[in-house]
Length: 328
Image (cartoon, rainbow, N blue to C red; front, top):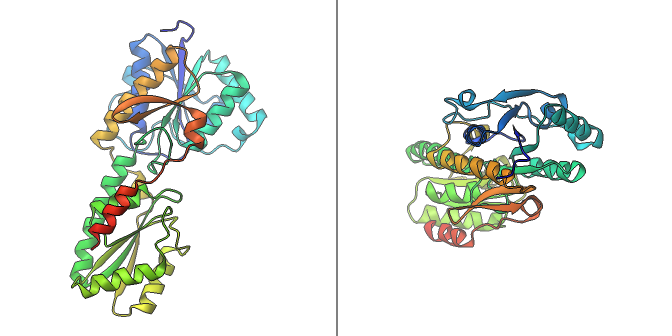
């Protein structure tokens, strides 16, 4: 372990996700294990610019592993997008004797960290925290597994109502640019169709599929829609389109929204957060910088931040095929 680092700061930035608190806890306790001081930065990069810091030790992260959200809060920061803003942040870190930074967030947060590293040669390490699972270099981001479980549980409840009233439900889930949540929860909840940004199903095929479902004896249907799906219509326009062409269906819309981001993290997310937190701190102590800690094939690996930001995480074509077969 390198002796050059005596204090590490940690922040959460961008959208919150379940597992962020578990990751904060892991960073703080790994620092304590290696006799390194740890500083919590409130409100992401905005707090870094304002010097909104708090010394953290093992006891300051008691009883947070099971909590959703982030105790360090999160905020967007326009000022950090300027050289002047980043200089202020750097000056605050140096004044607080911080030697390295752990950033828990998504690709926007990592972009800020990478620029900060290049401008000031300041050691940074990323931990991927976003329910969208859209970051290259890791099979799972923090919060993704929890979000899947939350969505499946809600769709199961919606199906009870759909089957009781012979209704068709469009259920919109998060994922403006990535269909991972829609694809996995659609299969897991037995949806009749799944609309995702990566695939252009087309409105005609959607109607054909719904007609086949009706003819095969299905009295109710669930269609899971990713908020950025390629049909180009929002979920309420889809409802109107289907009602116009299939008046026999009583169509309803359920937009799950931010409930997908909340709630206690799953066991998987808690364990993943713990592993990534340990790896991030120990990689910094080994002199590494400008990487993201992620998980691939159940092994914790480091991916250069630039690659994590610019790389494209492909949708699983096998899962798309499975969803087609399951909707028969």
